[in-house]
Image (cartoon, rainbow, N blue to C red; front, side, top):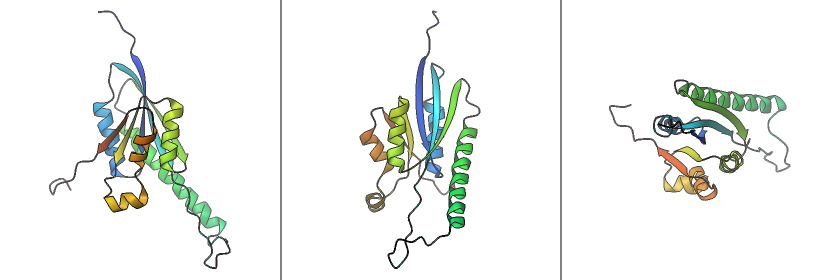
Length: 167
């Protein structure tokens, strides 16, 4: 049989601190990654923008000192590193796959769409938080936004509902 060059694919997996995204990554590693391809797996964590706090009197002054803001930023960076580290460790037993990590900041809906477009991803994989109708109406659905706005296929992996025996 002739040795056919493997097709190269870029697979972007959006990860966050939720179990849903780690389940999506795990599912992706079992079901999407293939030895028939030269896959590059890009793990993307998006730090949400820091909330803006204004003074109660409406002057626009900050309630927090620069030390507290620095501590908030450090915590945000630590969370990002922890999530990406956990996701990277999940990929360690997968052979012949290049794993890259990216940490960005901004509105996850926009950042994920932009990254998918800029890197020319072949597929975007993300978990579903399974928000109800009301919560989704207020928060907006990151996955729904991405489905509507990226040009490549989007794979949304739902985490199975846990049963009493799986808790």
